[in-house]
Image (cartoon, rainbow, N blue to C red; front, side, top):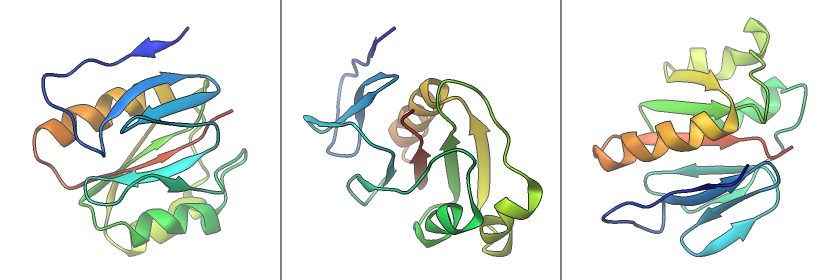
Length: 122
């Protein structure tokens, strides 16, 4: 099921569409896993299952107070040791399905929060 996002104001960092195989951001469609933040445009991210600490280390590099981790169509909580880069960097994180992650990211972005997103596209 494709989700279409409509907000009164959007930026180049706002998610405008999501489905299981792609995500739309700033008028560009991505068909691969991405990282994104409130201040850095979407970039390819090596997020696949199972998530690795090397992949999640990208979240520690994002200038954000919280990183939302979208794990694809299913909610898969990473092993605690995999989350170590975020924990060591003292960055908050939330893990959820990718569709929920897109919605949560947009809400936090609209609130002016310093938010990052690591999004698995299955």
